[in-house]
Image 1 (cartoon, rainbow, N blue to C red):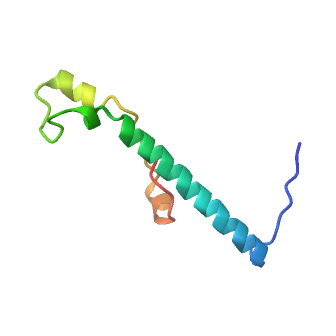
Image 2 (cartoon, one colour; image 1 turned 90 degrees about the vertical axis):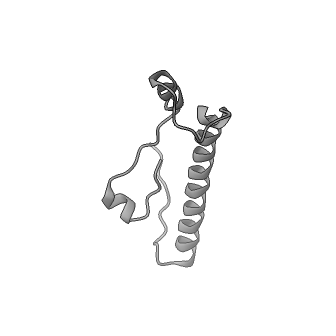
Length: 82
């Protein structure tokens, strides 16, 4: 088992560590979101603004990865969707 050194959040080093962690978390979220959007089947369709013609096309368009949406309480605390 490994032990992590803890720094009180009130110190300058603790606040700096929290900011770095928040930046890394936001970059991770942005990268995952960009990947999902880039790989979505809708991106490569010619008439992507039009409604699907039939149920098969609807299933194809929604076949990409779906993002998990956190509960309302977690969203209110600033947690990212996805």
